[in-house]
Image (cartoon, rainbow over all chains, first blue to last red; front, side, top):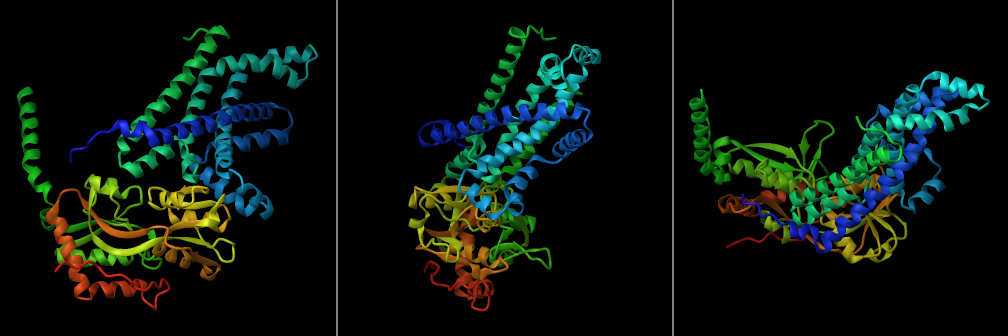
Length: 233
Length: 272
């Protein structure tokens, strides 16, 4: 069958608007989730290295649980499963708002945080142990030693693996369309359903994902080199 | 060695070219293959769904396809499709025909061809009984559930621009969202809503309300520009109607004794 390529239709007019609004949602959900998952991942990593046993157990089971279950299942769990757990009043309050978006953020954050926690933990391990002991000897508390001595060095080491976690998160964000969040992939599918020019719609969205990913990885690499003065090897 | 490789490539090309005319006519294809591959729904009572007891796909559209296969002297092979995969699967040739509650729309004519209308329905709303929603007008500011790739979500958005449409992958998911209160209504064709409503443990807790948001004539989807096959399908449909076979299948799935009762209120176009 002779297929008529028509990129003009997909990138201009009403459908162009759809792509833009989808891109906006993808950037929003990825941005919020990146910030939250980095914060949560750091907390989990520090908890796991603390001396308080229950905290260590909590952090370890959090990591293993969320790292070893499929993201799609987690998204459905938060979206459909929360109904049975939460009280009815809370549910109704949530559903009157943008619950779909919130579930997407929670799922992406928790899932990625589990991976980030592991990266950070390995980063912390790469810092010689006597630095922690020396800082404690100087009178810093465990948290102070972490915040001022260990973590700043650890982050420098783990920037490359962190970037790939962020990139994974941006790509994983396309899964939230299964619960009706109107992100870039959702819009591409909508355009396909309306125009049947799925090839063009998905080519455009692929290029957009690629561009976002390249910008993120370039940006972090630049920061790495210019600000942290780390040479890429 | 080189020469042998070149010869193989040439031979392959030759076979491809030789095979071309065979690909052109679906009718001959199906007859020589001995099977009719039909794309059908597998989670849409009573059109096409998995029977709990036998684990087979059954339903109104499956019986129609069986009647068509009999007329072709072919065995029927079913492939489950969804609202968003049915057209690509047809254009790629993965299925010969699509019988999957597909509305005959002008825009779809660019990609595929349609048979004459084999089922007539219209889009309505499924809501919680006494939930305060009686028509599309009551949906202002509310969330409505639908399914991706269907015409319903565009239609409801047009009829009530002030509502949020949340699209799911399948109707059972949309219905679950309605049950949990995540959406206040599910919108699609009345015939499908009847099936969704009756799939619940307590069908009486739900209501199908509103005027037709849009008419939805279903057509069988066939590959673009294959008029021999389309003529055959059209003739078969009209033959089924005239011989009363269609009405028998209809009664089996939508008759008074079934729980998906929907009176037959339209007539198939019959060419003299």
